Image 1 (cartoon, rainbow, N blue to C red):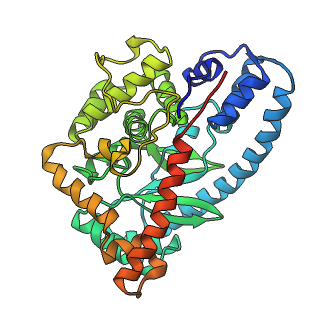
Image 2: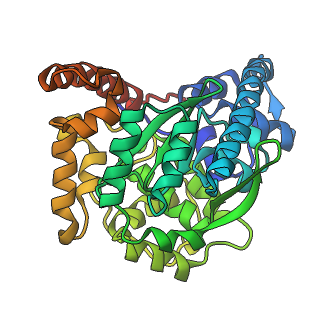
Length: 371
């Protein structure tokens, strides 16, 4: 299913003024999970409120504030874990964008914390993962795979009832980074949460991450479209030379350019914001307001992940095979609770979990927005 992008949501995501807010606008914002952004923007701009729209959104904000308080506490704990391990805290996606791109953290709520790590110091990494509460078998398997250069999407931890996703690549693709050391210069110091010292991506890296994320997850992922619009429109703009060097080194040009261009077109942004054009939008490119409803290997995310330089395709193929027929090491990461059981029993348990999760992701991508 898909639906046309609601006019008010389009203006909101593009960062343009919202003159008035109706109950229908609130319903549309809720359906695509941007209600907090609508409330904060309309309040700051002193927009006209109709019906009981302001009351509905104000009540929702109270919930968001409670969630943010838990998030800030979790960030402080995660920072302590990094300090104890002697590693820099590198946060990206939601918490980093909220602190560095939006006018206020309340405009960009987020349900989890995404951190980026690499395996150049495996002993320190093990220390960190242990403090995060991960199972010992998962730690050993993840570090061994990371050190060997095998791609690992993420590890899942929980701190203060907040999900903490530990990523070995910020792009979420099926291949490892060309050079983790290159990304060091693309993380800069910034205060996030209450007063947590962290490193967040430069605008150029954030734009690349957001564009890949939008390409992977489809046009129903409207928060990411709003992130891209704000990154493009921010004071100072984007250092396009630095951006181009980054995405070319990682083989991402043919993924990020169509995704960014889709946002420019669908949100009616000025074409002068980007130094390129995409004459024909690829069939896989996102259309804002439309969810990605494919399943399995037909999912846009998997296809985009495999759209890589030929030299990396064997690694991508191995990763896909590992997901559908995972080794014992991968099962230690994905299902550490089954460690020690016979392999076939663990494999069956893995599929019992994977299929419902994939189906839920498919349902969440089926976005319907009506005026």
